[in-house]
Length: 213
Image 1 (cartoon, rainbow, N blue to C red):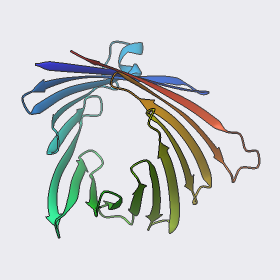
Image 2 (image 1 turned 180 degrees about the vertical axis):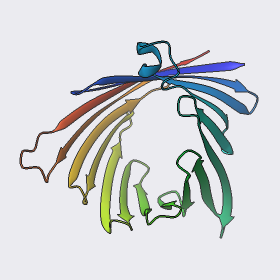
Image 3 (image 1 turned 30 degrees about the vertical axis):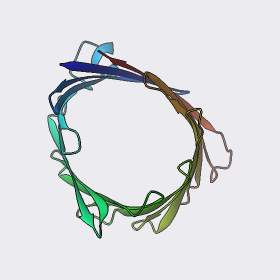
Image 4 (image 1 turned 90 degrees about the horizontal axis):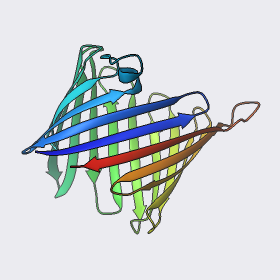
């Protein structure tokens, strides 16, 4: 039985937090336990502990131990005019919230996706264009807010990725630099609210370590 472990640390001016997970592969089923720093700092306690059973590409059942909440996620792929349509159904029992998500891969460069929360006006439509597999442009329209969000990213052969985002509803401008390898990764983010009178940037950093045994 193969085991994978990961540890993620997040650092910003306000606080430092961490998330750790351990996953076991049992055939085509994956068993996973996830803990946050709240699980160990005052403990050990059950705070921040979740358990999950997953069949990649098919379903995920996750149980949040302290909240006694079950989250179901089911995935499937169908073909429309020979194009793959990926469908995802997510339901959280505690707040009785259901989310439907779909993405249609038109070709290697163009993709359409939609995300809808059942029973609400929350619906987002996104178009993604990848230029030569390196640069990506993603406009997203929020039907509930009647606003647009934009994201532009550029991947380099070194493994580095630079991404810029802008949310028109909140006037939040963000920049992100990330690099991932098989065993580790890091991400540095900076954001500033252009609507604020004093535009103080917010900085965060994330580091991830992966171990496979």
